[in-house]
Image (cartoon, rainbow over all chains, first blue to last red):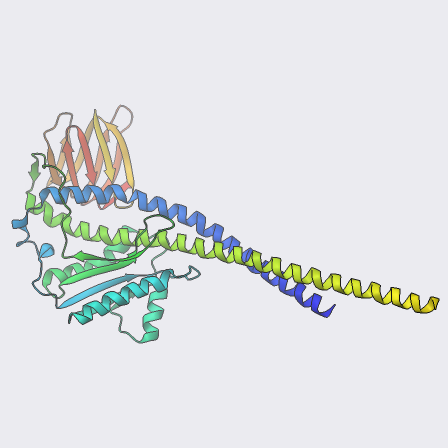
Length: 287
Length: 83
């Protein structure tokens, strides 16, 4: 029964693994639900801002606002790459890193000097490993990112852009379309591409003036783009983790079935052999 | 009645009716009653008060803007907490 005991041990160990992956799956499912709600809750603000900016924007204003400045040639760009702090989420982080590297490679190819800002332990670990210089990194953003986090991330870059030190800012994150579709995406957040206006703008009384309002609201719009990146990325991470853990749980179940079958077969073979030996022995005695 | 919504980046803090709105505009407080002309103004820091049939609702807000169109008042602010 030596082989039997070995199989029993393996069945136990796979069962324990399955227990862990199943628990993680359930945790990720409930966190995903919450993260999804946060994505939905962030929508009214983003829509209102976009609507108002679209209403106030006119092409001749673009010349005068630093954040709308369209540089003739991009010389220096910043890339903010959002990843997660934890793993066990399948290809989630490697897809993001791949997207980020593609963007960096494309910018390098165009002769653009790039600075990389990384959020999340996983991305930071990777770029440390390949030895690429990282301009700044954040690993303290929790699974409930706040608007404050977004502001801290991007405010410095807004200033740099306004002063002309950099010509473009990109964010790489996983877009949360649904729990099954979370493609990694790169979005250019600076210079601001004004949202398209829907319909004519109502005749407002504007205090202090259209321009002053625009000056105040553009940074809000940029910050909000980053905030949305953070919350969508978090929701995408939780759903990736849930899928990965579900696959692992299913897989563990399959392995357990195969091992059990092998174990039962071995047990039966041994019993059959024992019976054959007894029958043979008694037949020999009867002579 | 005015239809009021108070929106922060993280969530919609309030959505409902009120008879009056007093908000901290960039240069001082501004009051909105029914049938106000379409208006958009920047907000400063201070407390936002919504007057209703029952008790007033108060929020502490910081930055953003207030928009009035056809008795719909929308307060979109960077930081808002119920007070």
